Length: 75
Image (cartoon, rainbow, N blue to C red; front, side, top):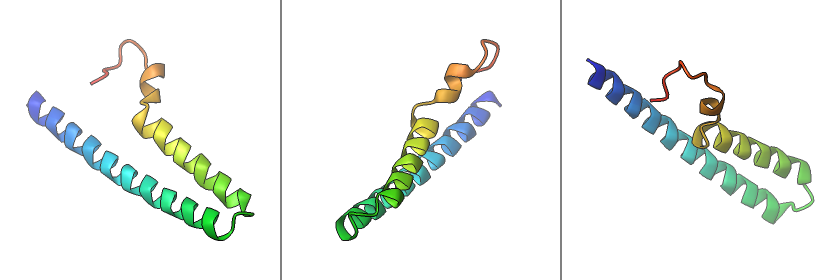
């Protein structure tokens, strides 16, 4: 029972990770295109950079674990 729950959680985390990495790749391509075509458009470039930083911090640096209490599970 516990193994099934763990495996389901693991599969969901993997799926989310793949979706986020694809999203980051699309943002990077868009950022490159904006920089190559219209290098004076600093505002959209900054927006894309902030979005990418948000997703990296949220999904790959595991910041919620830092602020979780001792009684919460870190699995």
